[in-house]
Structure formats: C-alpha cells, structure tokens
Length: 115
Length: 115
Image (tube, rainbow over all chains, first blue to last red; front, side, top):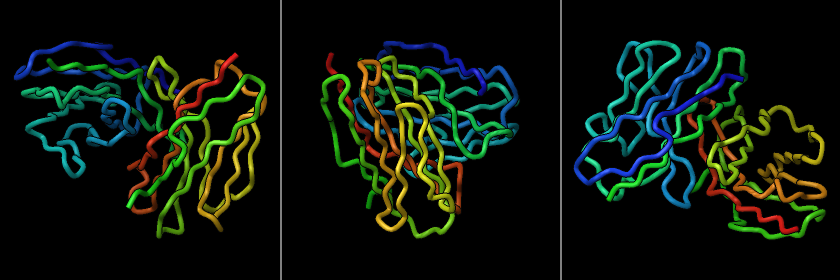
C-alpha cells in the first residue's frame, strides 16, 4: 500500500490562529480524504479532497472553516481556520488507491491542541 | 441512529486469552463493505480486513479471525491467544452502495492485553 506522511505530526496553537496540515503520498492515488478524531472519539469524515476542484464537504463541515487543497494526485492540505479549543483533535489523511477494492489507508495523523 | 455499533467500550484480558470484539451494523443497501482497523497508541490506523456484503465466508489470518453474519448484521473479530502487542483501539467501519468512499466508523473498542 501507499506510504502516507503528514506534517506536522503535532502542534499546539493559540485560539484564533490557523494551521495547515500537509498530506503527502509516495504514489498517485485515486482519492484522498480528511478525517477528524476528537479526543477519545471515533473518526468523522470532514471532506473528500478532489484534484483540481473544490473539496466535497460532509454535513457539519464548511469550506471557510476547513479549506482543502489538492493540487495533484499525491498531495493535499487541510487548513483549520480561526481555531478554538473545540478543534483540538487528531486530523487524519486517508487515501484510496486505484488498485484497492475499497479500503482506505490512513496517514499517521496530526495531533492538534488549541489553547 | 448509529450505522455501526461497537457496544464494548473497553475490554481487558490476560495474555494468551482469546477475545472477541463485537460489531453490529445497520444499512438498507444490499451492497456494502465492512472493515476493521487497529489504532495502536501511536495513533496510526492500520487496515486489517475488508469484507463485501456478498461474501459471508469467515476469514482467518494467523491469530485473527472474522465472523460475518448477515442474519444478525454482525461482523465480529476474534483474536486468539492474545498478546500485549494487540493492545489498541479497534474500529469497525461500514461503507454503503450510494457512496463507497464515505466510511461510517463505530465508536471503537479499546483492548488491553495484560502480561
């Protein structure tokens, strides 16, 4: 499976600031996704990152708060804007490869703490 | 209603014991996929297995086995002769025919394997 890296691995940010998280894959993939995992909780899909067009957001998530870019088939960014303590979570990038049936493979995650 | 229910929040066993993690799902689609992922303390989600709705054959992989029963909408995961390295949070997930890219994760079961 593809090797997925995320930067940063963790960060502590101040309320009102923004953080951009990068997801890099070592091979071209069909689909890229962003998930949020709040402390002690399950994973929730934020959006599908579409190459060359606007991301597709799930209910409860908006572009102004979580702008996403995907300039090519191996890279995507998620920005968490105007952060509040409630945004403290692990943010995970996942990919679906053309060769896979339907499973998604996940990056190591970015642990974000907002003070 | 939750699409994926993992009723066991936390399970503790002693090494070498067998343990079964329960997963019950809910869907109206006839075509769907079920998955299990492992999240060790490091945080990265590790893909374990995918099963489609047309394949009810049970699967065994080393000490891991999965029991898929459509009649009870369950997809249970058994670890035989558990080891300390099995300690992790295990997530069951569902994707449905109208959008296979959208995963519905259960709340996870934390497994503690004590030496």
